[in-house]
Image 1 (cartoon, rainbow, N blue to C red):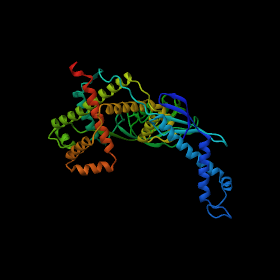
Image 2 (cartoon, helix red, strand yellow):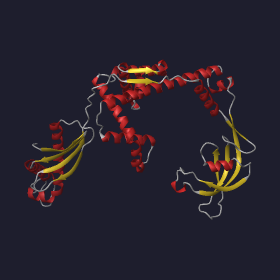
Image 3 (cartoon, helix red, strand yellow):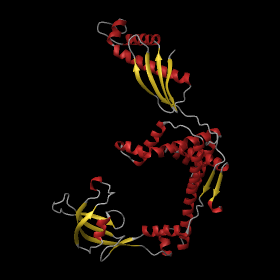
Image 4 (cartoon, rainbow, N blue to C red):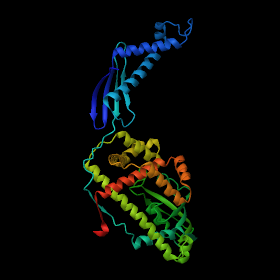
Length: 418
């Protein structure tokens, strides 16, 4: 098809092309489509396929016209892709279709092309790697967290204090001058941020069964903007107080937590677990810093559609309602674009240096997982395939190979040695 292609916009990855299909091609397609209709439609008084072509054209003018547009736009699009050698990044959009009698068919094609990353510099960068050493304080904090998880709540006498769980009746009038309504029950852990500070202070002045009323000021950063900074009468009745009692940190506690001979064994396991997480976090920070430095040294454009797709993935993961997309997109656009850039860089490095995961790599990883689970590799492979997780395994291996390649060619300094 001898179409005319005019570039109206070419900025970064965006292209806006005006496409014109010549009149002769339009007439040929109209004739071809009209014949197809004449051969298949039924008109009163005529046998199938015997109705006059002129009558068919008049009776089915709109349907024929629509079919011609769809066919010519589709064929012209294929011609544009072939002639312009475009590697599109997302589904192109057709706009402003113009189709008048005895005129060429014209339309605009808006598309994004897949950027080609020219990585002129990927070596010679320096990154400081955090030591990742676990401190005694971190181990103690984790042990306290375990104690807190095993704690029990027991009734307490006297005034409540921070950390206590209280049951209260809380009442406040809707408007100034209104009568105080019946209180609503609430369970609160004092000091946990579940109630505004003024109400918690009032609760901690009460004894069991006691009621107090006073004016409390709502904070200036209260989630409900309409109530920010307002002062309201508040009545609180303290119904119940419970205090948390954590078990002693001893050998018996260690045996209750898990299969440990005593507290020393539990402490060793906690330290090893924290060290594993700390090492993984330090490695991730090095990888992130390396990618950011390489991206800064090798600027490239990002298809907006890819960023929008990443935002949609975040929305689905965080279960964000569609009506909040605009606000969410505004908050996460920079994060999404950064993720897309990093992914594009990893893909480019994997392609340029033959670092993509092979079938053998995937098979070896599956075999390793099977060994850890004590089962057959075939069963693990089938399970991963059914769950759609094989691409995830492949991607993970590719990223590992890319990062190994990067860290071997750049200066990674361990903070512990500096």
